[in-house]
Length: 287
Ligand code: FAD
Image (cartoon, rainbow, N blue to C red; front, side, top):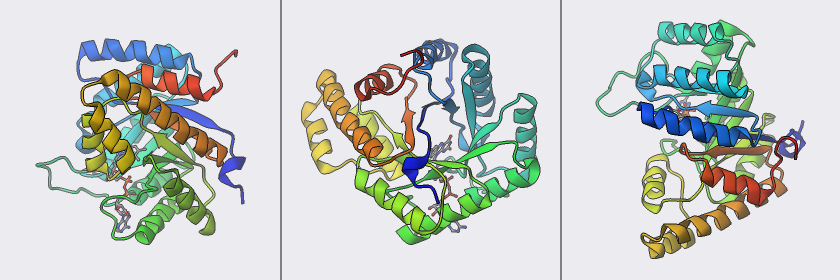
């Protein structure tokens, strides 16, 4: 069975669909800058409950058209029906999309109908039933354990179900504790799971925003990082410099330990990912 270190390295970037024309213009510039780095693919998030569906597709089509870089829409199933997912898959196939990030998602507040899929493994199985091997399917992984999981071992078993249902690769929730990642991939290997598990990397640029996201998704900000960020207050430049040091070291450790690449949560900004890419000396086309 291959180990994580045996896979070719994959570097990718994630965007969310812009809400306004102005934000769309800004994202276009961000994409152009990051496209020059030659990432393997760009992925575009999808609001659970279908709230961003058209904008997700629009952004993916723009990426395909303008950059020639593989574009992978995220697709969440919570609150949806088989018929709706079938139609979405048909639309994606019509547009020659071959790469998906398949997720359960979280029901938006105010929505109560969970729909016809309960968990992401059911979505992965459905995509395989409907479309065979057409799509390369990514799923989510949680080295620090999904917040709704009853236990770490349950969460791992649920991850296994997604792999057994047909996932080709995984991207993790972001984390700042490399040991959690290494433990997770060791446990996957012990269970015979042999897909790449690519660490999701969240640059540190804004303390309040990071704290909010981390509370929501269960990613831990270690005390030593949190305390320093608190002390910097509104000093954005110090936060940026410290964040770049911390996340560069994390990425170096992950890659040295065999991680099969890095997936950057860009937050629709180019500078943080660009700085990390350069500090890490990651490959760029023609370099
Ligand atoms: P699942 O794998 O279904 O797991 C959800 C929870 O259910 C876990 O606690 C798991 O242990 C448990 N579970 C799974 N199967 C079972 C079972 N059979 N029985 C009992 N319990 C079970 N959200 C969006 O809305 N849009 C996005 O575009 C998006 N992109 C993401 C990209 C990445 C890389 C990551 C890591 C997350 C993303 N999310 C996105 C967030 C994600 O939707 C949430 O974390 C969501 O809560 C879980 O989705 P999942 O696909 O991991 O769910």
